[in-house]
Image (cartoon, rainbow, N blue to C red; front, side, top):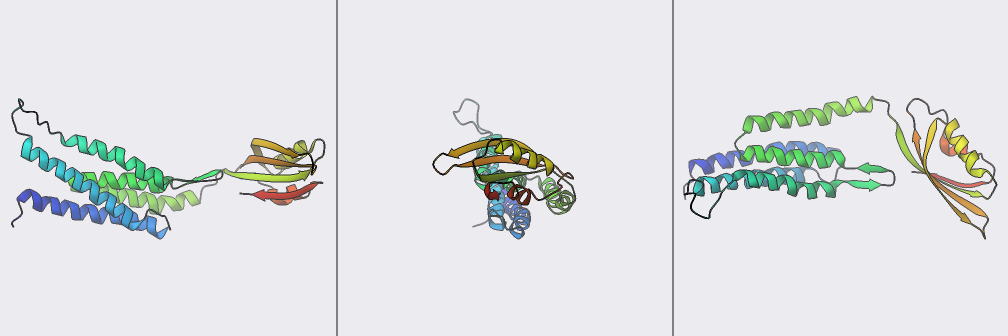
Length: 228
């Protein structure tokens, strides 16, 4: 069985999509992310094949008379790839208490799909350039981000014996440590005569003057302090 000129071109596009998607996935794999080398490779390869098949359909049926029921638009498949990859990207996002992980990996999956789509459409140079930009962003800009000072958010739980005005004392210690108290909740155990405070704090960059857990532990009546 001989391959047509288009099929040869498509095979080259699929191989390039596999390589480029694998390069982005390799960076994620090295950083221990669940969606790594194989996932990004398969996303790029699948997107390229979907786009190539769509173009093939257009070559086969696109020139038919407008009086027929067949309507072929290669752009429809590309649009559905964008929608479909959203579900895969959402699965890579993990919420852990007050923080969210996996946003960069989800964005990488989205870009890998775009690179695969570009390869399938024959935009090989564009796909290579986008891959290079993506790798530079992941490898080089990560170091730049690590050097930036930024605010952080933490979830704090405090269990205390019941004292009048205890919440105000806790809030004052949080402020003295250079943090802002944002969301808070209180749960009182009447029988045990204890109060459970749960709140979210923002540690403002450059203003942290003490360790929050240690400072809260020094308040009279505090039984337990946890920070996540």
